Length: 456
Image (cartoon, rainbow, N blue to C red):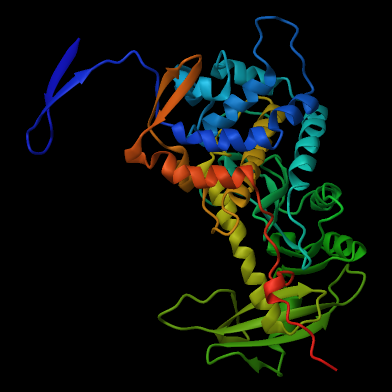
């Protein structure tokens, strides 16, 4: 059977025919499949899996979770979208799956997760991943933030709370901790929508720090004004962690900022100052750093206006660090990168779209997406050790998306990758790097950057 049509431009005749051969648009996924195989992905998931199916007809839960991850990698935004890959025979051969699970099978697996299963299972996965993060003599910066997952139903934990885009809409309110320099998520919690930003943050951080392997250390913590909490500051000080957190502008802090006289000019628009102050209910005075910005017509100034000081906006940070205010301000500005990580989770990996009636089933799906994000980050570090970071959606379009046809060569399956999509020439260098991974070295430890000592 064949069909004729005319091209949109040039009016050329096109013949359409069917082929019995298995075709996949995701032939480039072979480099990712090879990566997780080399890292021992299947073995670690099998060892950590809290469930075991006794039926001979049941699909291995490790294969079911892998099907979910691959669906998200190729762009699925709903459980039902995973059915797109059920007809992709070429991808099934690439992964070795005899049967690709349906969306109901994936949902049923997540439905089996309770609180104990979530903690037990993902603790093992996180420990396995974090052991592969390279040691950094300068340590890592930990950024805290929360976000809003809008919901459209009566799911467990979906409550009315802070929702700037759709006030009054029920939501979940996840909490995230990101290792900035490693571009990896250290920990994540799914919380009910009526949770405050800093609610449970001390226990959350205690869990996050417990996940750190011995070779990793946190040297700084950054957070916005939602985490301006005496309990959090006290906990960080107990742990001997340095922090820079945006202060909530209470009337007392506004008064202190307005009374600063010793301003140090940064340039014609910015100036910095500082003061020590003990707020009501606090156990001691702490250092506050103030950045003052002149209001201009051609640029939106950040910060808040003070009635006592017209013409300026102010941003106030609380810190236990000793560096000068300019350094601390620039150091805090690096925290903006966590907004990119949240955008990638939502826009590229649909972390806010996989929702079920059970709260812990939803949290299990949410943490699997976080696990996938970390896998993709580790994939980039191994495949392109000197390359710049790329979003998951960019990996999808530039590497994983590649037309391919399944064939045979004797007793072996053969996957023909399209040259017009870059074929093997574009992806083999990544594959070779995965076979011989290099751990990036800190510039301070690079032998080429170490100068010999001066002779006596």
